[in-house]
Structures are given as structure tokens and as C-alpha cells.
Image: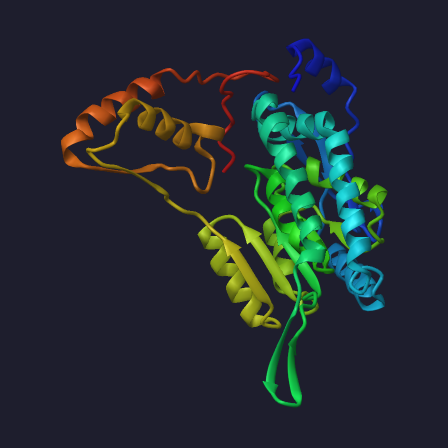
Length: 348
């Protein structure tokens, strides 16, 4: 993979066209109230774009489009072969536009272009392709219940899905939700984080180019207390898939119960542990792996191994090795850099 020199990415950034509108029913559109909010480069604080500020009226528009296409069956009743072909085409387009998507991700989050280009974008495309390939391999079930009866379990789409994703891996986490939802035939309303909306907006255009019917994927940018709350309380949304804080997850559960008792799938915060025993054959290797697990993406990973459980007899030695590895990390501010660690501005 060619990561190019700094000047290449700087030139590419200058010529980058940034879409700033909502995507509803197959087209880019301004927010109903025509309001915007500013998204900035977290490294330089330079403004990147004024993004459409979606609110409840825009969520209503998106839900109407998503419900309409679902009931018509343009996607929900389409053949597995068609859905597979469209999603594979989307993955192809993501790979073809990898540099553009990676640059949007890097400008929006402050992570190194190397990480965006090597990890985030390929991982997002692989997720879409994996679920595309699963479409014709996941079946219902048939069981004999008596000599003259059969019981059938048929897998059907849930309906209209709201997907709410955070800012640390915007496109990757988007595709982890979009992949299974679209593969199963659902319609989706995606709300990216207001801190990193650019790649999701661009993805919507690629999905349309891939052949996804209008209304199947809608992207509404905005704030959690406005667009996010409108999603969680909407009576015509069948399920919410969310990655983010435990506090917000609890609120989504409450909103779901107070509205139509929609299904809620949560991935909230964690504190993952590394466990090292005295019989570890290579403490240095374990310490290096632990440092990478703690500090990758500046530690802003919900499964980062930031809790250590060490056997007492090797604790001091291990912590010394971990300290040495940690001190080798370079933390600095830079606009676009294809190597080493780049400091993200803390975004809360």
C-alpha cells in the first residue's frame, strides 16, 4: 500500500470536495430549518465545513422515506442475489475511493492518514463485503414436529433501523452496523457523530451509485439531543443500533420504553483487561503488545486493554518494560502525517 509523502496529502486535501448536506430518500438536501453546525480539524482547529443540522423534522422525513421503501419491498423483498451484488458493488466503490475516504476520516478525527488508509477504510469495506457474502449463506430452519407437520423459522428484516455511531472510528463502526442491517433487507437511518460526519455523508452517495434503492439508506447529521433523541423516541423506528457511552445507552433504553418499545442493541464503554502470569515466555513482547493495545488510536478505543492484571512476582518488571515502551511513543500535533502516532484532540 502506497502511503505517499506529506505534500501529496496536503495537495489532495486542498482539492477535496466535502459534501455537507443530509442524505434523504436518495438525494442530498439541506436541513428543513436550513441550520448548520461547524466541523473542525481537531489538530489545527481549522474549520472543515458547515454541516446540515438535522432535527426532528428531518428525522421524520428520513423515517417516512425509509418506511415507504421498506413497505414497497424494493429492497426488503429483493432477492438475495440482488442485495449481495449491490453490497459487493458498494465495497468495490469504497476501495476505489479509499484515499478520499481516508482523507475525510483523517481530517475529521485527527488520526494519522496511515491508520485511516491501512485500517479504517479497508476494514469498513471488508465488513460490507463479509455481510454481502453472508446473504445467500444464512437460512431459515425447518423442523419436523409430527409425521404430517413441519415448523418453519423464516428470517425476515426488522424494518426501519436507526444507527448511531461515535467519532473514534466513524466509517468502520458505521459499516459494522450498515452491513448486517442492509444485508437482511432493512432500511437504515444513520446518525454519525457531529464531531466526525464527513465519511458517512460521502458513503451515502457511494451507496446510491452502487444501486441501493432510494430511501434504504438515509444520513441525518446533527446533535444527540436533537436528531439522536428524535430517533430514539420515534414511534415508527423498529430498532436502534448504538455505539457510544453507557450513559447515552441507558437513555436510549428509556426512550425506547417510553415510545414504541423498539429493539435496542448497545455497544457501550468497557475496560478490557490484559492478564499476564509469571510463566509468560516473553515479557517484553507482552509489554509491547500491551502498550500498543492501550495507546492505539490515542487510547480512544472501547476495547482498549487499559486494565492490567499482573501476577505479583513479575509486576515490577512488567511495569518497567511497559513504561519503556510507552516512553517511545511520540505524541505531537501535525496536520496530515503518514507515519507514527498523531495526537487527537480530546473530543469530549
